[in-house]
Image 1 (tube, rainbow, N blue to C red):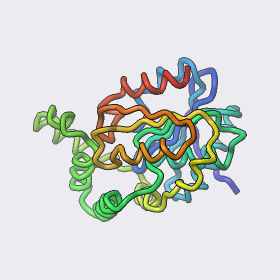
Image 2: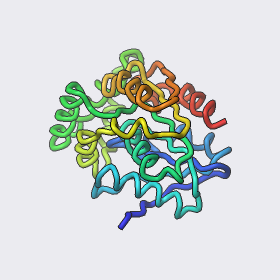
Image 3: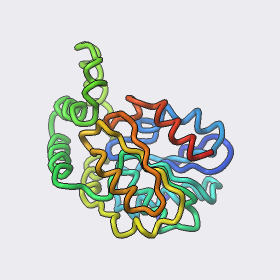
Image 4: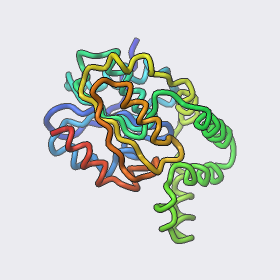
Length: 245
């Protein structure tokens, strides 16, 4: 039985379904964009269940949540792990998905990402402040991080340490299992892939692999670390808006 997630729904117009990243959430990963996107689209999002699930479970659950909200067809905007969820939603529900926007994502983790995921998983078992420092180091670009004062950095680390969602460990493990390479060539909807060029957690080569594998996909590069929500929300929104129009 498909699980239906607790939805966030807003706006009017064509459907836009949000798929967030590991250790994130709808507000954490898309918050600065929501008001603007809701002006022209019915935006549906839901945080993944703490109990976890497979990629199929998350894709099916998000699609069911949109349909329950009265949104029969939609573009899927995926971020990080959410790009794999979006791809799986498109291949399992081709009658529902009308387009894909894949940001800072991957088709599969490589050896470098495996090491990053190993550290993330181990740090989740212990000191959350140390975990937050690690995530700031790998998910934030050098130019953005360099602009922090020592006081701002301390505050940012503390805020991140306090905001780790329940279920993050299961989502990190799910990233480790992602492999959507075989299904990319079957995607037949308009697709925009957005690479974050200063990303040390999911380097831009992963976005290029997605774009190369999806027929007709467009690739856009934005100068940002993995945390594009904080580093380059305006550039991200501009790229999204161009496709949605």
